[in-house]
Amino acid sequence: MSTQTDVIIVGAGSAGLSAAKELTRLGIAFVVVEASHRIGGRAYSEEIAPDVWFDLGCAYMDVGPDPETHIDESNPFVDFAVEQGAVVKEYLYDSHYIRNGRSLNESEMNARERFYIECQEAVRRSVEGGDDCAISDLIDLESPYATPYMDMMAVTAPKDIDEASAADFFHRVEEHRTFNTLRGYGNLVAQWGSDVDVSLNSKVERIDWSGKGVVVKTSKGTIKGRCLICTVSNGILAAQHIHFKPRLPDWKMSAVQAVPMGAENKIGVHFTREVFAPEDSGYYQVWSDSAQGAYVDVNLMSTNVVTVFIGGRFSIWMEQQGQQAARDFAVDRIADIFGNDIRQSVGRSIVTAWVTDPWTLGSYASALPGQYHQREFLSLGVDNKLFFAGESTARFCGFCHGAYWSGVRAAQEASAALK
Ligand SMILES: Cc1cc2nc3c(=O)[nH]c(=O)nc-3n(C[C@H](O)[C@H](O)[C@H](O)COP(=O)(O)OP(=O)(O)OC[C@H]3O[C@@H](n4cnc5c(N)ncnc54)[C@H](O)[C@@H]3O)c2cc1C
Image (cartoon, rainbow, N blue to C red; front, side, top):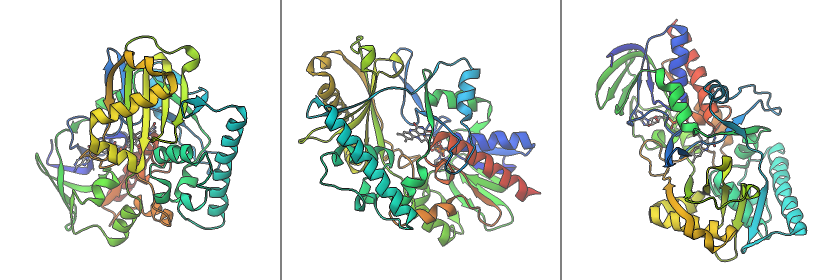
């Protein structure tokens, strides 16, 4: 690792790697330092069964542009996957709703759909009227469909609706198509980033920007740079796991605290036999009057894997209960859908724990009620020397391809500052 460079990039997730590639394109010297033993950050795939990949973080490749905001930032990872010959399939599955072990009938399905649309409309009216309250203030919590709505929101927001800003959620909603890749989104990002020289196991402990450039102390030594691109999560910034000297300005820290990390976790369960019929594949919401519900994806791309998603406070609590409890919860919800016999074919499982992951301290960031306006400060540089990238700063915030584009933007800002 060089000890002197133009730009120091902190973090080798999607944002840090795209910043590095953009600086390479611009002919600017840089050093990338990454605390973990691998690149990719929240893009990470593990083998759940021989040659079957499970994404612990991002799995769904969303593709813009967003017609509402006219943002045209396509997903470069879809093109990369196709170039590499990876199997890519559009997410075009049916949705299923199971309450107390029984599928909703047609009139219940219509009532549920009406309720979800009413919730969406209530959020739109409130935000367009200039308010930014908690989503829970806007919906009918007595509705029989409030429970699955809240389960879905806890995973997507990813916070319970009393802690989620309506404006932040509203502005994240886009029209898009979604794709999955058999090889795993995490593997794809790691393969795409493999040509970037990264110093692994190099935790940044201190960033001194008091002088002309920046001096960065890592667990592997000190590096001097002319400027820096910081791509760590809002969780790491809020916890002050990196000591900035002088400390970051109050306006920056207020924004970081106003858009804290949420909790989304996944439990992947592999089945050892072909237990699913082709029509079983797809998206399920399962809930009951007596137990916590979940949001479930079944057998996408015929992998014999079911992914059970949990979010918000329940997800934080489940991390504390441990892997076995999470696996039991997931298998119970899958049995609610397919019956108890399916338990006999349960194979290996993978349980994520993003809130306690020391390099993220949460899943992805979203604004607290009343704080959406703080988002714009997350992407702003400080002193023409510290630049910020990463999913929380992105226009497609919370997404892997959003993080990618934020890295490109920060690299261009750094390049302009060096002139
Ligand atoms: C459960 C879950 C599901 C998701 N699903 C999707 C999805 O389906 N589609 C989608 O597009 N997105 C999804 N996302 C979001 C997506 O994964 C992230 O937005 C994206 O990967 C973030 O990239 P990043 O570069 O901003 O941050 P990261 O990937 O977190 O990269 C930051 C890097 O900084 C490193 N770091 C931290 N502290 C230090 C330090 N002190 N010194 C040096 N390095 C440090 C970290 O190790 C990490 O590698 C999901 C995320 C989660 C958690």
